[in-house]
Image (cartoon, rainbow, N blue to C red; front, side):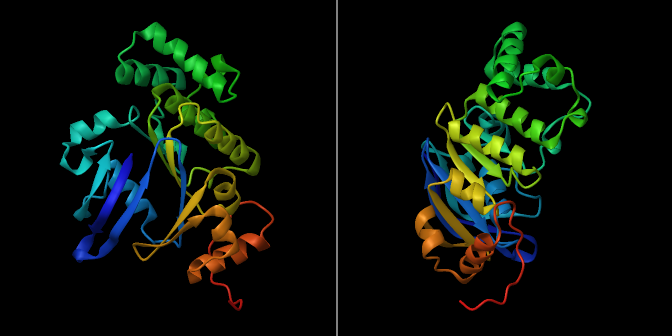
Length: 267
C-alpha cells in the first residue's frame, strides 16, 4: 500500500505548499486527483517521487510504500524503486525521453538495467510491450527518435515501458492534457486494462477521463485535500465550492479537456 500520512511541504520563504495530506492507494485501486491550478497537486506527486524542487522540503508527515518509509531512503535507494515499484507518466512525454536515442535503444537499456536481463531478452520485451499498447509497427517505432513520434504515441511508449517493468503503483500527472480525444481514449483504455493491477493516482482536470478511469476522486485546494468522494457522489453532490464550479463546467462541456476559469453561476 502507498500511504501518505499528514504530509506537509514548505517552499521558498516557508510558504506552505502541502498541509497535512492523508490518503492511501492499494494495488488495483484507481484514485483521481483534481483541483484548481496551484492547489499543490504536482507538488504532491513530486514529493511522493522524491523529486521536489530544490527550494522545497518535507517538514512533517510520512510517505510509506509497502511498509517502507520513503523519506528515510537515500536518493540512490529512491531511484532504485523507480519503474520497478513505482512508475510515473508525465504530462509531456517528450520530457521523459533522451531525444538523442532511438526508442528501441531507450527501452532496451531501461529493461536491461532495471530488470537485469540480457540485451536480447530486453529487446524482445520491448517489442512485446509495444504491441500490447497497440503500436503494432514495432520496427518503425523502435527505429524512431522521440521527436519523430506524436505525443499520443510517446505516451503509449511510456505505458509500454511501465507494462514491462510491472510497477505496483503508477503516478500519472495530467497524462491526457496534451492529447487529442482519440489518443486520450486509447491511453485511458490502456490504463483501464492495467494488466499488473497497479494502484494508480491519476492527476487530471479532464472530467471525462476521471469518470472513465477512477472509482474515487480527491479534490485539492490551497495545498489541502478538501473533498474525497466516489465518482458518482462527487458529480451528483459536490460539496466544495471549487468542485461545484468544476462539475458545472464539466456538464457544459460535451467531453474533452476542461479548462479552469472563474464562472458566475449561482450555486
